Length: 118
Image: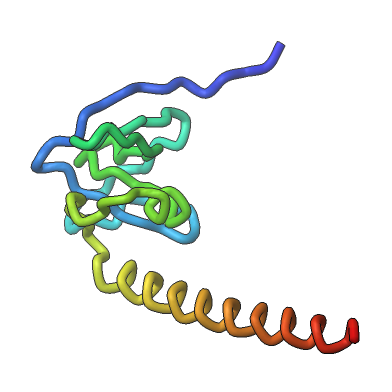
């Protein structure tokens, strides 16, 4: 029998703070909090527009931790109070630049494939 991870559904509150990470963090990064991030319980945070995304939570200050991949899927991330906004904005910018490079590469690749068929 497969073990299932416990899930708790929560609504986004105005005072909720989030930390968007690339790699898992075991200790809470917020100020003087010395809590630990609970990865055994998935929080399904529901936004006002009905979207849900998965988070984990600090056991002391209740800061929500979510992977960058989940953050990217949200259509309106501006509603989140993100602790590391600058870092996340830099990741978003790099991701957009990489997407442009990939599109240009695909365009060149398709153009060269059409020329090779003749």
